Length: 60
Image 1 (cartoon, rainbow, N blue to C red):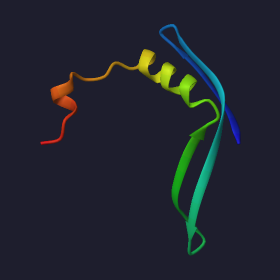
Image 2: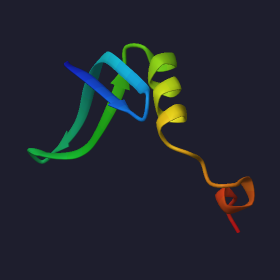
Image 3: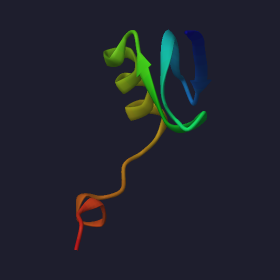
Image 4: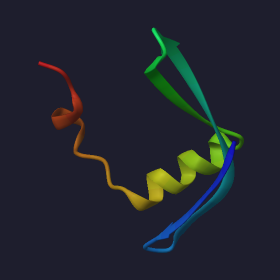
């Protein structure tokens, strides 16, 4: 567990995150980061980073 916080262009987040690891043959094969407060994390990222226009986000 770790505390993650940031502020960017007026957007703020301060929450706890948990990292879950998948280990194979003694090596980390995958890591996933989970937020204690996913709604706060979503709000921060949506405010801090602009999405590309919809056509540019769609797969060909």
